[in-house]
Image 1 (cartoon, rainbow, N blue to C red):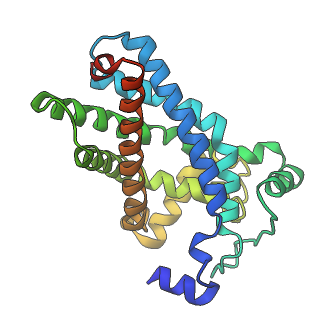
Image 2 (image 1 turned 180 degrees about the vertical axis):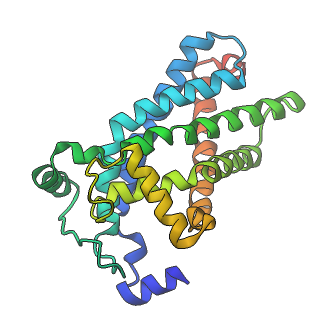
Length: 258
């Protein structure tokens, strides 16, 4: 219903608004996360069998590094994705950006360079999302590998989707707050200008509960699950195939399996 309404009011291409910033942000974010995760894991594990606890810690640290480096991209991405949308809320101020570079320029000029890190605090809390995701993914993969020599493409796809679905459900209320803070043009809690502070996070969570009830914290979860679970499943599938091919070419297939 939401998709049909957007298309009816804003045109057929409206659901793809901001696709290029999204792809750019995803590429940079996934590169930073995977590179940091595997580098830290290689240094810590050093050829030994990994554990669920180690996977969680490494995933958490990789998430922190990723947040600090890529939050400005996601702030711009959120602004561009919502630009041109028809809001039914007088508190939201419309924006006018001509692209990624212009968005960076306007945000720095009008709001200061720190505005590029709006929503950093909930983002740092949300590093538990990929950490939980990787913990469940690596754990499920280890359990399946005990029963068979090699995982099929379907196995990787399913456990990737399950791991991301669990992580998304657990952390979804914070993701909602994160999006509001990244947009930055919502006049909420004017007495506290420190966007992303714990006080603002609690304020926004309280406002949603008061307006929509406890389930308001999970408003839109079904759409988010469809998007994130499928994205993660496909990402893990491609990642495993590319990694296996790379190790095979380098003659390190046995090391990769270990």
